[in-house]
Image 1 (cartoon, rainbow, N blue to C red):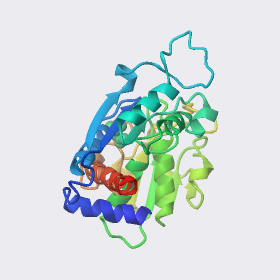
Image 2 (image 1 turned 30 degrees about the horizontal axis):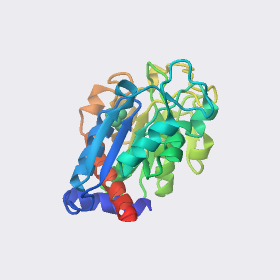
Image 3 (image 1 turned 120 degrees about the vertical axis):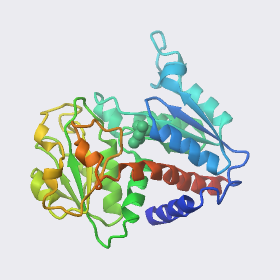
Length: 304
Ligand code: CP
């Protein structure tokens, strides 16, 4: 499926309006429980390219506070139950797309994507993840498209942990590892001790605490922070030396630098790399449109 979606996305990148009538008369509701720039805009552009009408709701700011728990006595802050809200959205739209970040405090709920699954359960229509607690699939598809555009036979791909000032979710790193391994790439993951990702996403990767060793001979270096998974949601140490700079890449002359954005410049990644010839971050961001378009086209063909 990944290869089919990548091929479809590359086709749409060449001709964005190839299927301009595929989604005619169909509406997609893009529901954001958290902030976004790229996902918000690229999903709307993708839908418009297919003739769909996108409607965006910033549920965190503009919607009623949602109650997620079955049987809750709603006598505190929540105003509307997910059962009622998702069912209503299911009657307004043909496809729903949801962004729901993890709490980073309730591990059991986060690892089962509780909030996303509440929407899936009650909406009764196809639901696309715009980043959930565990995965960011449209980002990862865009990342795989970006790697494929370089047409390397068996690229060495490195996912390296980077410093950050806040506790960051695992979704981008999980998803990137899952998709890179699924696409057959040679994946090395480098992180300081205590920052191991959920093993469910990293089976088959080489995992090391030695960033310098990991970077040797890399073709692509994906830079991303994540908080501890074992000591859930915690920042265990800041490790400023892990911020990637040009000097780290002396043994990786071909390495291209990837990041999903937004990026904290000179905390996660240096200006010299982000503004230099190695950076592929704008290409990744552009490919978000065609990743979303490939997935929406697949759903539209399915629902007819
Ligand atoms: N990469 C990404 O998902 O960006 P946004 O959070 O701005 O949507």
